[in-house]
Image (cartoon, rainbow, N blue to C red; front, top):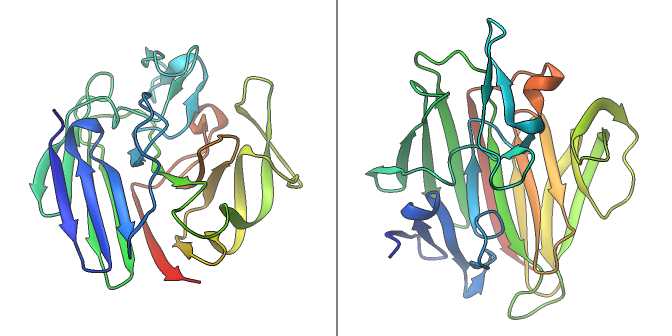
Length: 257
């Protein structure tokens, strides 16, 4: 049975499933459920953190500063590694809305701390990476699953204005080449995002995502949900020579429309 950590801020209430990646399993605003529920697979529900890598790593191979290669687990999205250790390893509850995780090999010595803070009509969500004795490249991000349908209002729409898009190879990994963004549907990484991205359901709700992340991934090819993901670096960043920051914070602002 999962252990749930509940936060109630009046307008917004959270249920955080500590045993399932310390993810938000439920986020409710004025009676509207804003997280895709469990659907039988690890990757496809809730709102969760991704670290010490976000997105896919080609063939699950990561190299240290000395050039030594290490194999990451590829069981969730073979033949590649995906979304880090945060979803499959135990977290520790450190306080109200405050959690930590110690990473296994080859990232042993590194850790991540995650904080959730409910404001009047917003959720502040932050991640901080501590490298410790680990010298491997790292990057991280947020992976919220927004439902296509709420109990009322229209189907979800995405308001997102990127300046550039990573060319996606046939293996769904970015090639490193930046191109003019195409129209969706997307399973793609972007940069130079203009304005504040948001998801919205006409006649119901909008959620704005205020974050200064340099990279974003948008996924809207699922029948039940869509994802708008701020990240410190794009998928396969280590193989693209892109370095991620050790801290990221996002403010999710909820407004009825």
